[in-house]
Amino acid sequence: MGVPGWFARERADGDRFADLVDGTESPDDDEFAHELALVGGLRELGAGGAPDAETRQRIRDEIAGRLAEAPPKRRGHAVANLAAAAVALILALGGITLLLSKDALPGDPLYGIKRAGESASLGLTFDEQDKAKKHLEFAANRVGELDELTRQGAPTAAYFTGLADFETDLRAGVSQLTALVTDQGGQARLAELRSWARQQSDRLGLQIDYAPAEARDKFDSARVLLERVQARTTDLGSRLVCYTITTGSSDELGAVPAAGDCVRNPDSPDAVLPPVTSSPPSSAPSATPTQTSVPPSSGVDTAAPTGPLAPPSGGTPPPVVATPGPTTRTVPPTTTTSPPPLISIPPLIPGLPPIIIG
Image 1 (cartoon, rainbow, N blue to C red):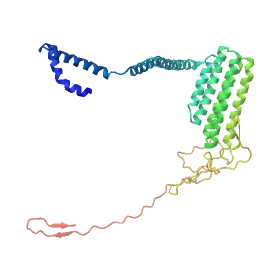
Image 2: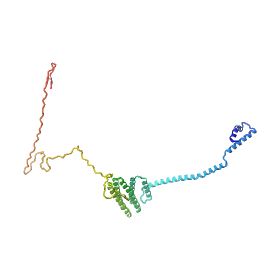
Image 3: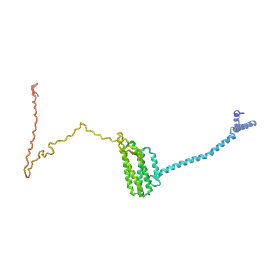
């Protein structure tokens, strides 16, 4: 019989079996046998719901396989964590090393790290003018480092390294800046670059006498390059107002200025306009010079004497000059108007004075 049908039939007997177990009812032989059959049926029911041997083996194999895969995964996570920690450590050490290399000089072990940091800074700069300024800033830093090398008495190789890096940054900065000036104009930029080049040349000139003899030729070469920069800025500035500014070719300092006649371009931003002369307004009063009654060549003093003339001590007395008398002022005649006649009215009431009008 099926399990559901058997369970429905035996359900009523289950309550009775519980009473027998509790001792509330005494079983007889038939009832006891029946209850034993019920227990056996329940056992068979439990056995029928259990998985077979093949299923149990499959489950056992799957669990064993998962347990076998667990250690490699844990090892992978551990390796990833170690790699992340190593990267963080490298970055931290790199930041500290870059900070320590800030004052490194050419020839020092950390100087290469300093230059690598400068290259990274240039890579993160996207504006061309800012890049040119950074190159010139790094070149000026090299000049300061060369001055420190002379104080420390560094070897010649350190000077060679510093001067080579100076010329590299100088060429890059000047080339980028002249390209911007050619496209956008800017006399002020060229003037600043010319002044900067003159200052760096003067700084290098003060260091030559203290540098090793083997490195002095390198100093002279750097100063010649700075003189070329000054000449380039002057020639390029004179062509900014022309239609043809450059020859179309470039060298290590950037665009080469054109030569020959300059046809002025009035639309150039660097074109100098003539000054505007404005005439004074017509309503403004014009100052007239004061006319003198006696020309300057006359020797006669026309001023009235302020006191009596003293006679000379000797010789012929001077001629007497008649002094003009006081000028008479003509006063215009005044016109007098006669007053109106008086009108007298006798008093209206006796005893009062008369009324006079006028």
